[in-house]
Image 1 (tube, rainbow, N blue to C red):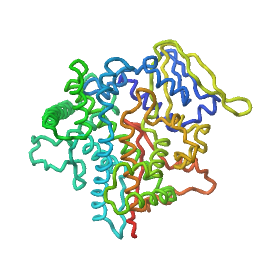
Image 2 (cartoon, helix red, strand yellow; image 1 turned 90 degrees about the vertical axis):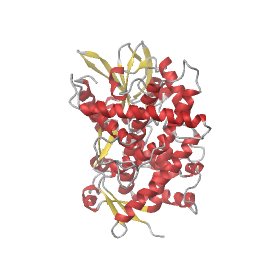
Image 3 (spheres, one colour; image 1 turned 135 degrees about the vertical axis):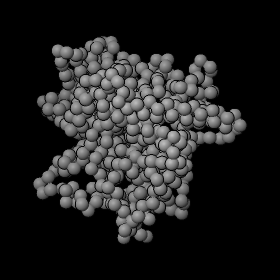
Image 4 (cartoon, rainbow, N blue to C red; image 1 turned 120 degrees about the vertical axis):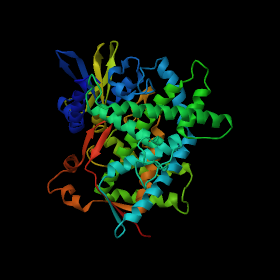
Length: 491
């Protein structure tokens, strides 16, 4: 990022997260302009129709590529590519097929396995069947990290030494790190890049070495997967699918090894940060509102009855776990805002408030050069789409007969051809984790947080959540102050 732009964007995201739909309500419009004598006008949009129009026209509303350098430390990749041009099409044609049903099945199995291993560690440390987790965010992130390493790259980790792989590192600091350790070093360096404005020199010389190590290991893995594929071995992890899909293309359409490295790094960032933070926030919401655990528990009992690992297709029967995960994504969308630059004159459909209080559609002109911000947070807190938006209501994401919940207005994975290809990966993991946890444990607040987090006399439900739920934006929206007690259920 540019030296001054990075902190400005972080400040604006903090304002967006704090104010949500308030500004649009005050203006009586789902879009408004910010103007400056020093830069092009900025159009902030929280309208679901307009955001879908933006997402459907990525060649008109283009990415400001100078802001995406952070997510391309190894070169061009699917996310950090422009519009629907030839570079994006090459990456998309290879990456999208990697997220297939066989891999989703692997995600389901590895998530259940990872949860069971976590529970064993918690039970050993529990006192009177209760385990206090003061760092819910870090544990949820590690769980997601474990799943993406296992289902994404067929690499194992251990809960016995979080942050380390099952292969023991020697005492010598010169011994080569494991793949998970190399990945974690890259993730940490990306976070530092985001938090620190770019300098004309690098104060973190080890970052270059860590990224070179990750790149070297991924290229070795490419050769290993190619050998396994040639021998007829069936592999369903994301990385194997990526290599296989690339090799199936013609020479001109095939991704280079360096491009596979770049896309692999992107999948690790997306799979690690977003799911981990969403799961931590979901656990906090279940602790604050324990009545929502009952329907999850009832479905989990049915799905897991008599089967340690039921088939992957059962994840669709975990409707309440999925609804809880989706409601958390609504309240804590990983991407707070998504910026685009309009490269040609066009129009968008927004809504304005009428005298009778209703909201009516209106066409507005968007001129070339305008910086357009899709405000996902405000869209998700728009009371016209989500009544009582500041209240945690998982049931809003359940179909009720012929009445279907509005899937087009729900945008945690964005919309259009540039939407996230790992959506199902995240939903399968999220539903499995929440169902497994609630099946085994009653999720509660830490006793030390009870008094602070309880709803005060005269405090509205929305005001209560606004006071206790805190988050900041790093690579993705990150919840803070989450302390959870897991109390083992007894049949």
